[in-house]
Image (tube, rainbow, N blue to C red; front, side, top):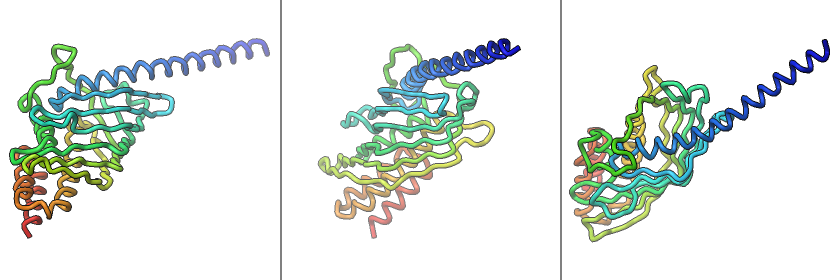
Length: 259
């Protein structure tokens, strides 16, 4: 009887070890899948290049990290990239990874580098936002290794998203390339996609970029009082391609600068 129990416990322990090993191996493969997905679906949504150096996913810990995320600039802009983030830490519900809606408990972006490059005809961030709002219609297509990027049917829930330590490098192209670097206040978004349907990757990108663009415009407005009327016109012109909410913000900036 005792021997049977020992054998039974040995089998149970062996199964647990095999299960944990399988989860670790699956996590490694899922990391590669997520990396490929970011670099395939990202350009399809934004119409600019999207690259990431590494993706690590731990199903046991319910965590993931992305290192070296770089979002390219639209055609016609000089800066090599619009946004770069060294590390993004993600808390994920492991049970949701293989479901139709992935639940991300938290996303934490630390010290991203953002480029705001603009003139009277608009700016790079507004152009990317326009591309997201009208995928396939605005902005040139981005070359990828596959003939046609796959569409993602996955939906997402993001309970808590925080961006801290962001710096925005401003290049006012209509003012002879006037440049300045500004610190952005923390950006905090909550409750994204908490309904049953969730939100798409495009919806998530739109929410984040809208928040970044709004914070950037506020920072530029507070530091632009000495740049003259040309800067005011530039800020007003930057709203050509953005949605109503951001356009209203830009109009408010323009009025503030005219005081």
